Image (tube, rainbow, N blue to C red; front, side, top):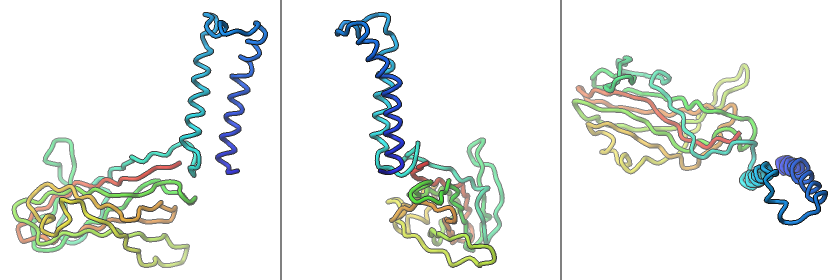
Length: 237
């Protein structure tokens, strides 16, 4: 029997002993009968029955899962532009066009700016626990002139031991959303929300370093504003 199954059995047995046995003894002491269930002096009986039923439902929902108390498939974490890394071009912190938002702006120039987004999620050394990374949304805007090219990469590296060098990161396969799955769609003068869906989602080990790298090949007058990213994942803890 797995450790989780053992915990479930013990919890249910404890609930039975604490809730059911005392009530059964009381029922027998009072002579039994269906009418006992409806007496006004038993206001807590149905509440206790509800507690026991919810315990059963919770056990059924998590049976067979590796983990403990949370298995949420709709988790997201926002990664602001201030947490990202920028190479090539002149980048500056700016207020967003909408009040109380922030962004990173690249000055117009005919060069290729690279933005690297660290995926910062809860990680776990135990298999199938922590964060199960599924997709990443990235948001940016192009003004004045369309880009010459835009592309993305997802890398997964492993933190080395003391004294060892980093090994080459492993590229992770993914697909673009339908609004960005052709090169022409990624160049346009527009506000972009590009979704990168990982082909084979994975649990992030405690020594995994996951980064999304965006390349923006700008024309001479392309003005680029980067707003940040959102990582979408399953949380199991």
